[in-house]
Amino acid sequence: MKVFLFILLSLATNALCGVPVLVWETSPSIGKAEIIPALSQLDTDDFSNYLVKKVHVHKPLIVLFEEETLSIEDFSWKDSQQRGSFPKLQNLTGMSSKVEFLSSVVNPLNALKDLVASHDYVWKKYDKDLPVKPNVVLEVKLDDPLPNEDRPDLLRRHDTDIAEIYSQLLASHSRIVALFTGKHSSWVEVDLNRVRRDAEPTSFVYESKTIKMETPKPVTLKTTTETFNLDNPTETKSDTRESFLRLILKFSKKGNESDSTGITLRNRFDESNGRWTMSSIEIVINGETDTLVSSMDVSARFGRSFKSTGKVIFKNKSGNLTLIFNGLQAEVYKGAAEKDGAKEFSLPDVPEAVFFTAPIWSGLLTSFLLIMILTYGFLMLSDIKTMDRFDDPKGKTIQVNTGDN
Image 1 (spheres, rainbow, N blue to C red):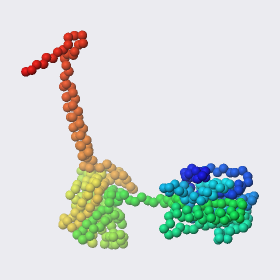
Image 2: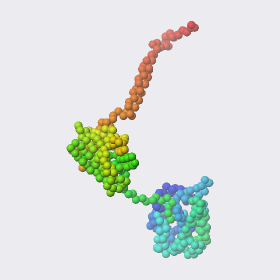
Image 3: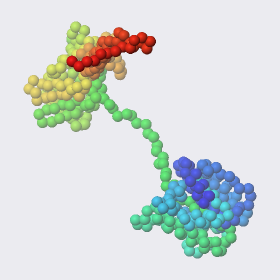
Image 4: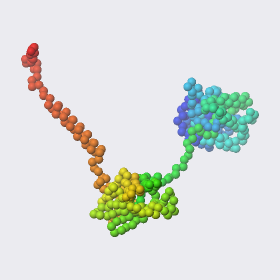
């Protein structure tokens, strides 16, 4: 019973790659007993030294009961009637001379194999033919689960097998060191190699030294028969004229970069009175050229950017070509502001920088209404008039005459 209470205290052990090992002996080993902390983990060498201290004098029979997987929870589990998975094993350990529970051991089987090589032990697999000599490591590999057999039933069946085999060994051996463990832990965290990857693009940027455009989603081109998502251009060029600038973007159709009949967008930016305006987009598709314009004023002062979170739509006169920016921020850099690499956008121009937004108006109206209510309540309280005369206990009692009218 003590060993199972000890097991419950060991549940906090965090064994990432170790397995629990239950050890019991028919006769105590010679020498000072080694105290192993309950929550410690033994590596293969430590466990090998632990076994050597038990066998270096008398060389007892070592019997290994091996599960495929085993964890501390298998020992502590109980059903609704408070019955565990190993009732017979509990009786065996209760009658043993010494019982130890090691909550986490790394590769205990390798430690036993080292013991065979260093202390003249013989490794033998269980085959109904029990060993006669003591210096033998008897490996008893417990059966795999039967069809439709759950974990508790499997462990109880193995509990019966362990008790039966151990009883047979006791009839012919006076010194036995028995071990019950598993090849693998039931709870193993898979080692993952972290690979640093570039973050997925959250926006699409088209830029030159003088112009920068950014959209959160690919530009959409709609014709009467097809729809194209223009995301990454195959070529970006700038064209500087005396009175306007152009940002030329070439896109391939359906990802075919060698497609000579792709789509070309020539975004035109005019300069006038200290402002820039995205006046039109010249599009070349299927060898034909057309001009798209927008009903929205896409412009800003120099030193400021244009920003719209809604759709910015450009259409041709006939309406059969539609270019949609699903959100757009653009800026033209002039003079000293021209850049060689990436540059942050300036603040949006006044049309987008609206101060009195709907939430601000709502807050102001709510505050004004609350002030009105509190003011009215204060006026009502201040209008309350008290009595001009109070009852004096030393004076004449105030009497209020009442009569029937």
